[in-house]
Image (cartoon, rainbow, N blue to C red; front, top):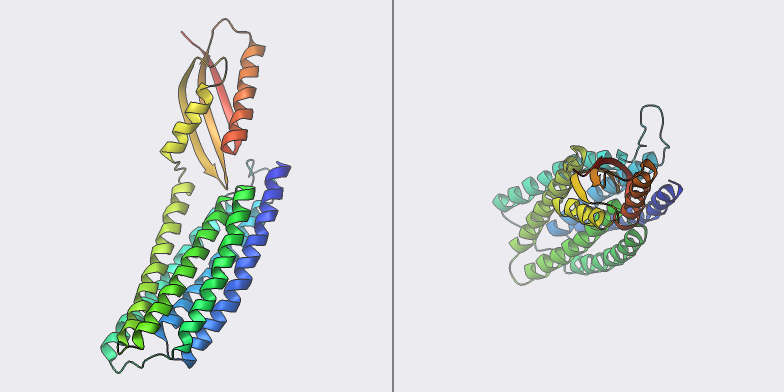
Length: 289
């Protein structure tokens, strides 16, 4: 388990990088949005504010996940980051809806001011910075096989694209279409809500012991290749943090000794940990009749 906790500690670096970037960019976008009268840049700034909450939630979850198993958490505390992400999705949804309401309301107010072209430059600079954060977190997440950090990296990439979209809306407003800036803000609101829904869906799926069917099939295929396994009666799995807990019932030659059956079980555990990043594997052996 030492390696698991070391990986979580490494993942904290990515969360801190995201927090620092979002603090800087949200302040820059919100200030510039007000100064240059850009609804799209303001919406993008509020989007980054929610990303700060998400990154902090991921960081808190990673910290709690490092607590060792105790009497009432015998599998450890790895699901803490999933719970934190679920709470963050609610916050994102509230902010996203507020951006949508403000954007739609500004359409009916009329008299929309054309944003200063400088705000487009701010949006482009922010997009480049977020792309750099994405590349860093994506590389780190793949090195330590951390799904939470990988999801955060994808959020970094979507934020870079949102900033590009804001820049497009601002530039379009310079050509006699000031409402295009408002439309860009509404699109940003939809993206925030969409991201919130995806985090909510994935979090609730994991917390209710949902498991990807393709991954379950891959587990079954790996087990079937283990020497001595003559049949697989059942395979179940659930997500625990960034790892999987697996229960498998296999069939073996009824003439095998207890020691030989135990060795097959050990090989299954070792192979699943190597290939599928499983944290715990429970193997039940039955005779093939």
